[in-house]
Image (spheres, rainbow, N blue to C red):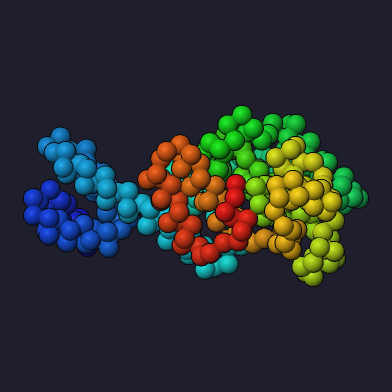
Length: 295
């Protein structure tokens, strides 16, 4: 559709006939992303009345939400192999103009610092200790215990800038960096918490607990845990143990939980509109596990 045709449609947004407006709205929504610049220009026009501006704001919001949802669904259909891509798509919900290059450059700098201290002669424990030193001590990442439920703890760009996050967002950064360094760390979807499993590279394909050497708690400065600590944690929160609470989950599971955390964060703030948006985005990734229902 040409710019003139789009402009003609936008000029009908403030039509007092509700039937005409609904038809115009549906057509603009079908066009999707390409119509956003024209809508933004129209919103800024001095002659636009309040009704038109409100309708444009609604359209921009719906189109943006559909764009993010479409991106997440396409990412999941491809297998969700790139965890960073999934986390960046979630961040685009709040930051449409997100500079992905800046995010990736920051991660590359951290990755370089860790890589310089690693070598093949180190044991798995020693590699994690090196990783923890660079990530937590040198670069200053830590759990945001004071403002645990704040939405910014779940946006990957905010976590990189502020160096504070929740168990899931810190684990996402940890896993993304570990994968880039060929360290076999994978997320584990615990209820009320999230940890990483360090896999035995020789038996990781078995998918059993025997393939896990130990667990890493990114929210507590990379503390190393054994299966007994996972058992104790589940007993403490009075949740019956399930195999899924000990084994790696998929990247799609991780991003689904990231969306759930954000929905819960906004709900706690009384922002029901954003909470509903995030629930819609999560629904686009299908049903989750029991752990997804808990922070």
